[in-house]
Length: 258
Image 1 (cartoon, rainbow, N blue to C red):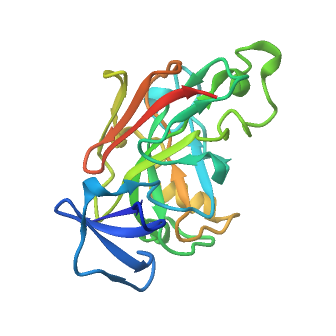
Image 2 (image 1 turned 30 degrees about the vertical axis):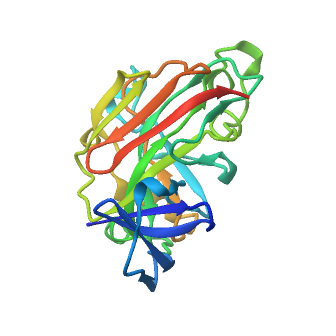
């Protein structure tokens, strides 16, 4: 098991690091290939943590928890969609609600990080290609997504799921963890609003990754949000949303108006 971060200091730009004992040791290269780890580290309190990956692509899965179906039929295969790179934001960074948005919800999720190139992978190959996991929040504008605000419904989820800052991730990337039965908790202003384990997933990570790879080649660093449990509700400027996953950590973001 290892814990990686991406960070920056007052004097140095974004870097990979290995987090051990409260110290961050800088990495030359990246964890997906050959790299070297510095012998000494800097105190975690002295660095700013960024989103733990700079991904080539971001995917997400809809309707993937039994508790999230809410009477809807379970999909026969994983329902995949894209989130743009510009939606990515890190721990502690604000979630910005667009001026035209009226019904923005949190969605706490386990996020997979791809570690090798995968094309038409079997589930076994897909499982081996998952490098690690992190916490994520698939922020969603329900009016644009479902038409809850009447004519505002879009044909695609390009902005409902993909507006700037709608993909918070972090705070760390953890490898070597059994992510098949992890407790996931989402809190809004300290109140628990989602609680489930990843054992409730309809499609497990290997199945999701294998499905995507049949038509789209996955690359090291790609992120895959795996779905959200239970129900969700709106966030407003000034709110604080936290996604905590057992064995990974706590992703905390404040909501602000755009």
